[in-house]
Amino acid sequence: MTYVILIIALLAIIYGANWFVDGAVGVARKLKISDFVIGAVVVGIGTSLPEMIVSLKGAFDGNSSVAIGNVVGSNIFNVLAILGLTAVVSPIVITRENRKKDLPLCLLLSLLLTLLAFNFWVGEGRGLSRIDGLVLLAIFAWFLYTSLKDGKNAPQPEELADAKDIPLWKSLVLIGVGLTVLITGCTHFVDCAIEIAKMLGVSDAFISITLIACGTSLPELAASLAAAAKKNTQLALGNIVGSNIFNIALILGTSSQVLTLHSPNINLVDYGVMTGAVVLTMLLGTKGKLSRVGGALLFACFVAYNAYLISLQIA
Image 1 (cartoon, rainbow, N blue to C red):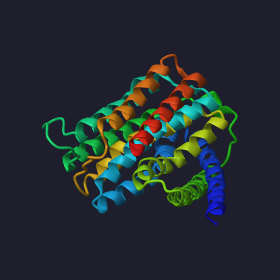
Image 2: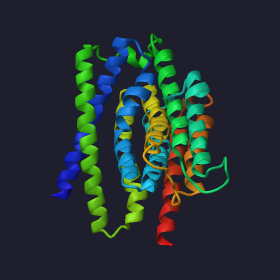
Image 3: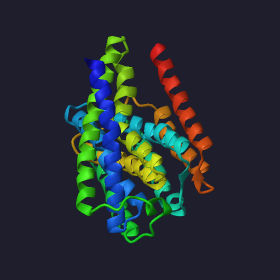
């Protein structure tokens, strides 16, 4: 029965992602907002709801390692695995605005999280305090405001020119229904995957590092691949950048208001991979496009990182 639910959940993820992306593109056309901003704000925030739920639950349960580990693991998965696979499907256009503002902000937040997690300012202990969280929330508010302001009445890219013109109300319905089906499918998919992993004797530590972190990022994966299949690569990029900013700035900013977040089980290698993934993306996209080869390189780094995690579990 578990395998049947797994297959049904996978179908729900596929169909939900398609409806969600179609609705998001429809909103972008009707409101004349750039597809990158729709990807970063609507799709990015929407697909990050599972991370929000997991991290807040971890914070309220007093398990701050889950809150931080989920975000770090998800951000690594978003850039190396999702962005990499998306670029393999369809090379991703990286605009001048992406290179000057969006990706640097993603990098800045990754570095800031690392410094805050290790209490760089005071040199002792590790953790994100309420004040740290307020700083992150302020950065998120600024990102949201400037993105919506700059994205309004932006010229529509060629990818949207051939998109189906649908009424705004139908676009909003597609977003709501698609997101609901997508997240429900992801939830059941992860639950079934964890159950199967436990039956196979996989350790709880490895499950939390990989299946939970990657599982909560399945909405981003499904939405980005669906957008890439429709040749809407800016929406796919916006989804990943927006999700990573949302994960660090809003999720951890909010979670740290519940309790000080400590992450003794998340080491400097994990933070380094999260930050390095953004740096590598920026370097690969300097010519205005993340090619299929660049995408394959990102995914290869993800495989190498997971091989490292597996080696730690075996040791």
